[in-house]
Length: 377
Image (cartoon, rainbow, N blue to C red):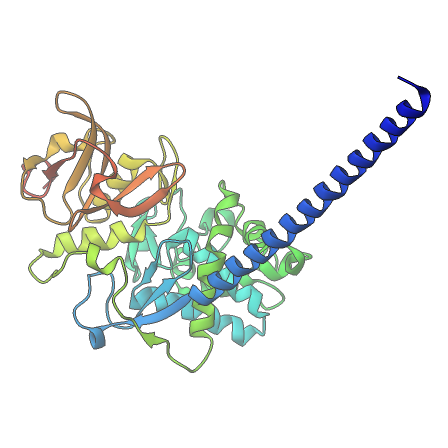
C-alpha cells in the first residue's frame, strides 16, 4: 500500500477509535444518570411506604399478639413488625428515660434497636436465674444469666437481679453517662467515646459486646419508625388490613390459651437469624426455633425430630408443627409452626431468616399435634 494511503488509513482508524471511546463514555454517563435516578426513586418510594399504625379493638378482633394499644410497623422491603401493648410500653420506657436524661434522639433509636434484638422489647426472666421469676416478666430466656429487656448480666456487673428486671433501670444502665447507675463500668452508650459518629448498630454493639455484633443494624429502620411514632403527641393512624392479616387465623376466640401463647411466642421470634445448630433466642435453626417456642409455654421438646412426641393430624390448628422436605420414612428435613390459612412460621434458611411464609414454599408437608400427646404434658 502506498505511504499516503497507509497514513490515511491509520488516521481514519484513530478517528474511529476516538469516536468509539467518546460513545462509551456517553453511554456510561447516561447509565449512571439513569441508575442514580432509579436509586433515588427507590429511596423515595421506600420512604413513602414506611408507616406505623395502631392496632386494637377499634378495628375488630386481632390475633393474640396484636392486642389493644399495639403497633404495626411497616418498612418497605422488610417483614411487618407487630408490637403488643407491653412491647410498646418497653419501647416507650427507653424513649421516656432518654428524654429525662436529655440524650440525643439517635440514642433512643440505638436503644430500641438493641432491645428489639436482645429481647424483642420484652422484660425476660431467665431459667438460669431462678430469682428473676420473682419479678414481673413478659417471657423466659436462657442465655447465661442475661435478664431484663437489655439482656444484661448480673455476673458482668450490670446490676442486681432486682435492678435488671426493672425497665427504667435497664434504660438508665444502657444509656450510662455521668448519671448512669454503673458510673461507666460497665460502659453505657454515653460512656463510649465517639458513639455519635459510629453506625448505630456499631454503637449498640459497643455497649452490649454481643457474640453477634452484626444483628443490631438490621433493626434501624423499624426502631426509627417506632421512635417517630412514640416520641410525639399524635397517635398513629388506625391500621387497615395488611397483606399478612389474611394469613393469620381468621378467628382466635376458639383457640385454647396455650395455642394463643404459642402463636404469641412464635411471632416474637420473627426476624431471627438462621444459624445451623443454633438454639439461642433469634439465633437458631428451624428446630431450635420450635424448641424455644414450646419451652416458653412449659413444654420441653427434643432438639430434633420433634414430631415424634406428637400425633399426626390431617386437620391442623394454629400452633401445630409443620414438617417438610421428606428424607425417608417418618423423617423430614424442615419444621415450623402452623399459622393457619396455608401459612407457617419457620426459621427458613440463612438468607431468609425467621419469618411468616406460605406452607407450599417447601414440599411434602405433614402436620403434627403435640398438645394432645402425653409425652409433652
